[in-house]
Length: 327
Image (tube, rainbow, N blue to C red; front, side):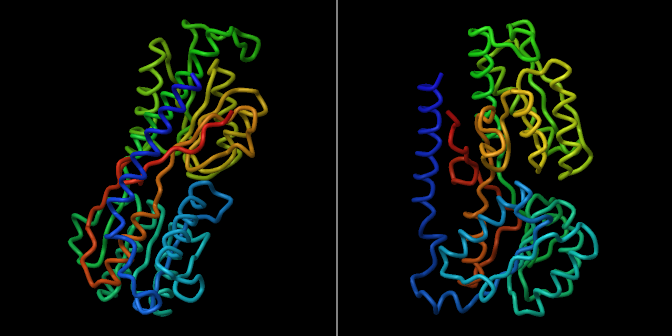
């Protein structure tokens, strides 16, 4: 199992490195150093702060992309955290415009109507929204959506989960005093909302697991929130009590990984490693790497080029990645 997963991860890393090499000329700037950086001022809006695995993933990517372009935090770029999916988003975006930002990013689905509102009022500023859907219908030259084919990473993480189940079956591992067998191999999934993004994610994860463990079944529960540690922990525990032998999630806190660690149930997380919270149960995580998009969009502003209205990154472009496999 370990050899196969090592080969799988090596392939993913190789594809990402090749893709990054191919994209370098488009995203690394024009070599003018400070002269290039001086042409742009960037704003980032996040729903929560670094305590959320989802938002931390965006924040880390923002810092990476800006560092690659020679931009300095609180001088050339600004990160505004804990901005709700309310009129607060429009207010913060307008404040960033007033601060001189000529490109502004937001990271949460519910930020979209407020980003569009401010984009209409400020046609000279570029607005980029992650996970949104309305750029192609609004028809604004300065409003853009971006996402990545994260189902690719979910599928690969599902393969790792299925291989772990096979190992547990072979070893006669017990979960809650019951041996894991081919007949009762079951995984659980803690979802945030019944949105297409979440459904696509857990479907891909399940198909990946079933590709190597054909008898596996899956139960799904929803919290109705992107970030609620108590509900996510409760949801994971509910699935464990229903006989799930491994848990994954599309939710943003450490609730599910913590429940898994407490119950000694293997966990596949999302948006980054949760090894610190689950050193004995964390297996692997898939995540979107937003740095290539941030760098691309900012470079477009620097170069005076149009930004794609609907941008999608993939495994091949380095925008979908897996974290390091836990031992």
